[in-house]
Length: 580
Ligand SMILES: Cc1cc2nc3c(=O)[nH]c(=O)nc-3n(C[C@H](O)[C@H](O)[C@H](O)COP(=O)(O)OP(=O)(O)OC[C@H]3O[C@@H](n4cnc5c(N)ncnc54)[C@H](O)[C@@H]3O)c2cc1C
Ligand SMILES: *[C@@H]1O[C@H](CO)[C@@H](O)[C@H](O)[C@H]1NC(C)=O
Ligand SMILES: *[C@@H]1O[C@H](CO)[C@@H](O)[C@H](O)[C@H]1NC(C)=O
Ligand SMILES: *[C@@H]1O[C@H](CO)[C@@H](O)[C@H](O)[C@H]1NC(C)=O
Ligand SMILES: *[C@@H]1O[C@H](CO)[C@@H](O)[C@H](O)[C@H]1NC(C)=O
Ligand SMILES: *[C@@H]1O[C@H](CO)[C@@H](O)[C@H](O)[C@H]1NC(C)=O
Ligand SMILES: *[C@@H]1O[C@H](CO)[C@@H](O)[C@H](O)[C@H]1NC(C)=O
Ligand SMILES: *[C@@H]1O[C@H](CO)[C@@H](O)[C@H](O)[C@H]1NC(C)=O
Image (cartoon, rainbow, N blue to C red; front, top):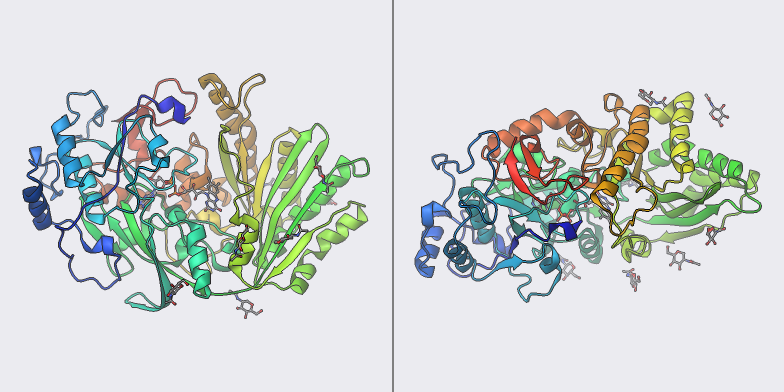
């Protein structure tokens, strides 16, 4: 959909502020170098003096509660858009760029510059992030936080917005023994731009297992979820720039409301995370297994579905044993089916415990005369197992195609009762028989760490997580869908895919959806994405960001805003952001 955003003028700010900024007040948590030079009233004045910039209308100033709100709580009031009278004048942008030491990027078209080598990588500075928040708030600009840009829902993009790009905050540090008030033990401090893979690799080099990533704000499920729960359950503290422009620590000791909300309550709505501290775990062995089951001349569709019934019916013992699987169930042609396991992931298992666990399934395949040649491999530790299965990202080659995805978290209760299980399985089978591709997991990120955070309550119940897409009408070009095609796919997803899954697993009974891999037009997303936590999250949002500096579609508090994007077929970010 990026091509639809060509009108937008998105500005990526690489934070390149140098020299002038003084060290921040003493803190109990270790800071990265870029976090030690934070913006204060004093350093702001020094910076303004040094650059000779005029602080026009106080656009670079902190929010002390007395500043006028340029976007008052008035129905229909919009954030400034390029071309508006209220859009900052060129000299103000020049001043901002000067304060950032030339780190501002004018992007045409949107998105593209973030993938080009512009020669200013790894130069972001925390103080500049604060300046961007101040400027966006005071000048009534839409502010977007973007890391990798992987968001399924377009939460990291926005027409006419100032974008803070965190992708280059790559600092990563391992502590064999970290002593902070809330925690004592092995940990890692992770910059906001570090990828999950980089965390795993560094932890491996230091003989442990890391458990983090930029996805943590939304909760973060991983192949270790069965043993350790969600990634967010292991965050000990976060460094954050808040809506008033200040740089703070959120931990069990300070800013506890944000500490709670930032672990599961979703990205881009409570502040800009510059880094976080996660607990690490000792190395453990992993067994992985990949296999394919097909219908064929000798395997009927009926036998195939009996095999699937056997596989799905084992999700309770599988999750109780701490395992996880990631699979694709597809129907290449009517009546023919393929089930591809890539991989079954069994942390802390040996080949022998894995065989015992999966024996009922493989025995059933033999009874049904279904051939299968699993590649079951023992890995002495986590990183080689991850690297051999996900490491190359080889199964994630969907780039270029447009799809309208959605997901559903199905709770354990639908498995524990045989009649309920059969009805649930029948709903899944019907979706596959109608020709849809189902990508799914068995996993149960129970809260074994006892964390008190905002992770969607549905994750604590789940045993099966399914991701599906809406179908384009016949004749549509899936690479270049029209707004009508997108609308049709979105309606198909809602009516024919998510509704039947919601019917078998309603929110009231522990069902829900994962906000990070969701349908942007999910109805009643508050309940689906945030479970029982939404009201508390909204209260924190209102208190911490009363002026609505941070917005992202389906983020906490976003029901107060709309993106006027015209007729796009699905909700996009290509339009003015206005209060409803
Ligand atoms: C191929 C693929 C595989 C995936 N696999 C998994 C998986 O196994 N487990 C899982 O849990 N999820 C998975 N996801 C979903 C993933 O968690 C989300 O796409 C997530 O939003 C990525 O975060 P990001 O910061 O990299 O992306 P972005 O699109 O840059 O950001 C996502 C959201 O977070 C906000 N944000 C980013 N950085 C910050 C920051 N520093 N401070 C505050 N807000 C910020 C953005 O504004 C936006 O709202 C997968 C996604 C893809 C595309
Ligand atoms: C962690 O591993 C990296 C890479 O091998 C190494 O440079 C670093 O010194 C290690 N840290 C500790 C504390 O052992
Ligand atoms: C399954 O079918 C696919 C194509 O439909 C084929 O490429 C693959 O070899 C088959 N695998 C097995 C194990 O039969
Ligand atoms: C891994 O297994 C061992 C023994 O089999 C057990 O003592 C340990 O607690 C397990 N680790 C986790 C994280 O479950
Ligand atoms: C990771 O996988 C690549 C191949 O995809 C391999 O070359 C490399 O050695 C692997 N690294 C580890 C630590 O297993
Ligand atoms: C089996 O899987 C392992 C990784 O898990 C891989 O290294 C190996 O090449 C695979 N073997 C075959 C025959 O595909
Ligand atoms: C569930 O389905 C299985 C397989 O089709 C069947 O054997 C079993 O009797 C069903 N159980 C109930 C309670 O319907
Ligand atoms: C799944 O379980 C929920 C909660 O008990 C129930 O409301 C729902 O009807 C079940 N689904 C089926 C298909 O039985």
